[in-house]
Image (cartoon, rainbow, N blue to C red):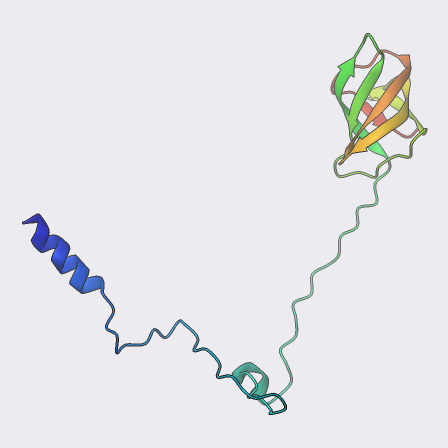
Length: 135
């Protein structure tokens, strides 16, 4: 019984060698050098070409702003993530904020790795989640 079903499935899904799949393009015939080739059907159509879709170019204008993602209290440095914001310069001093209260200051020391960098804690006490931004 099982072999009859498998045989029927094999016959039902097999393609006839005489049928040509409409989804597959035919290979182009090779032409000798110097002879003109036929243009694709899309470029032969009469009338102006269809306009290309236009999308707005979004350039974020955000100040230097990041979040503390790692803290080493003993060596007094933090790793700051600046994803979706402008990256700071090496040596730049930024304020350290918890909510709206300024609690300290950090200095960007690098190295940069993608959107993250290392900053030395110059004053105050940092915690993971604190905001680092320009004053």
